[in-house]
Image 1 (cartoon, rainbow over the protein chains, first blue to last red):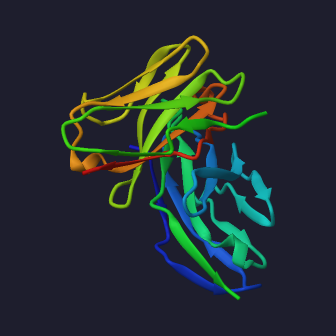
Image 2 (cartoon, rainbow over the protein chains, first blue to last red):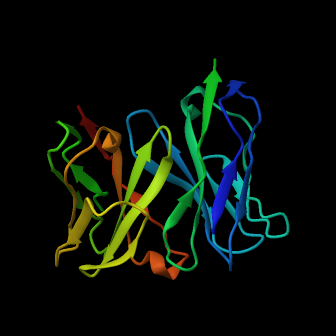
Length: 112
Length: 115
């Protein structure tokens, strides 16, 4: 079945460092890919999405490119801030059902 | 537009009881999906309702059920609560996730604790 694998955390960075969180997927068909972020005590917020191969999603300085040849959707940010500390989830929508399938989440901690 | 709202935000129940959680989707959205989040299992899909019909269901026991009303509001019910049902229950709404490219928007969740 469809699945998403994320790099394990926690990831600890200093402010202004470069961020990469790896995400790979297995899916039939052509799923849409998403990054969601969860701040402590809150629900999930959509960070960015891409719906077809080579699409680049971007928002708030974060970017991710839909790479079909490597089945990847890695999240990057050039300069992280303390306020970016959160849990990041990579997800895809199953083309059969439309349900979201999530990776296990990666905790990011940014230190001043 | 107002976002997805969920009530209550926190619940404490004891084993064997039942509980009902409520979700109001974004105005105009016809689909509501429910997810369970636990530290051990992560985020897991429970079910999806579209136009008052359950369209998809995850791999959960029959104690978990739901419904959707004509105004798209949805409720989720868990009967005969078990300790393992303690989790954050998230509701998400969209126009139609069956379209694949559609985006699901999440509410803040209901934190259920079973004692």
